[in-house]
Length: 307
Image (spheres, rainbow, N blue to C red):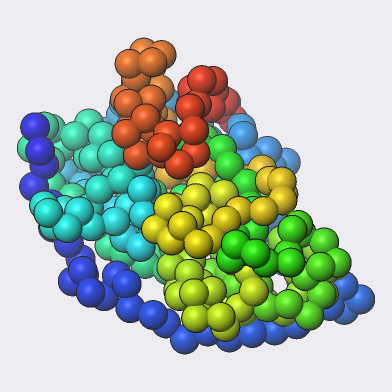
């Protein structure tokens, strides 16, 4: 059964190009002090065990009557507007709806709030959203500020360049070249520590980076391979180059005080992964991601918990 949906912003607002800033990445210059790390951090085992409990956070959602979910409606295949139905659709959206149904029932309503990476943590901490399902990586720095579910997807960063580019990898070829990334994303730390001498150009989102690349204002885009594949699917003149540079673990982000909600989302994910080839996770992957990322025979990441 389809769920009724409330959009937090008009569709046009989701694709508006934002301003960009740039800075040269110098391997010899000391980086700014990073945020505090969570104690004894293991991103794969940072979430509590699943349990369906009706604590304060779950009751707050039920009393309101709808789930408020932070997403990125500019992420083709993950979360974007279906132009026929004018409804959000994609891999992340399927997961949001599964969470909403579990808490609110089969006719659950969701308010989708589209936001750039830099707003994710502030909006969670100020309780403007209940959950963020926005290809958000679980990192030790973020775990000091917000809570995460168990891992629901594993990926890593890659470079996206125009076909025919002389850039073939994440190395000295990037010295002096302009590399676009989303402000507040994990790609920023990766580029700063790379020692490549690239010039970082920051925009509000990876879709803005696509525009910058198409207009010739930058030489490459650094983003998760999953998002880069979506950009390449929209523009076949682009290609991914080089190997995956690291491992990024996606989790559902929530307020650190909402432990009951975190446990409940983990319970939803247990069901979402179950069933092998017929699991909701696999069906969603096959529908949205398999055409560009290829088959995923190993299925969803195995769950691991802190306690």
